[in-house]
Length: 258
Image 1: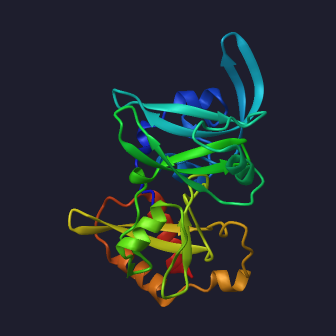
Image 2: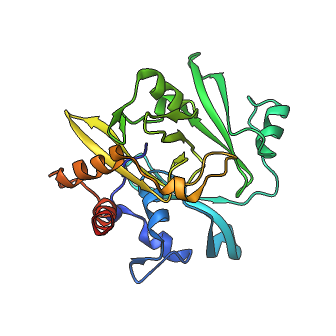
């Protein structure tokens, strides 16, 4: 899961203004893209304007953006353009790359050796929007402790980190995806993930989720949310922490109005 990692007040607004994603100090991003950005993920595909690079002026460019802190903690803006041709990672076999690009498989788990001789497990996906292979270190993927009020087993957490599907007793199915704007896909349109932090629960409400890989879903079934989900919503409402982001407060307000 991806909790809000960055403070909106720390965003490089001037850089965003130069590419047409902010004006007069105000952001011109939709809620999902802004939430993705602040959670350390990539946005959806955006149209950027007036890019300057080494005396080259690019009037418009389709790209995704993300943030990365520099050595001083300042947030740098990263641009992920649409490549003409995907560059295959050295640790990926040609047939594996082809399967990913054709959309026949969702991901691959690969074991590599880092500079210190340690084994590292990587989750490899393919982003057809930008023609780019997305590589995630599975050890750095944060698995939720609970989803819809159900505790995940160690095996379920491990499967989540490996990009495999996890199914709950309420028939909610979900899995991690580093290329998805929400960072998670599901057979349901919404779910609530929770993680234990310092003895308390921190919640993340996911809404408008994309369907599972290569699986169509019935709209009515996808909108049928379990009692566990609604109980988790109530738990969030009863949470007195002031650490909730404005996104969470907005989402809860919408849930209360239903």
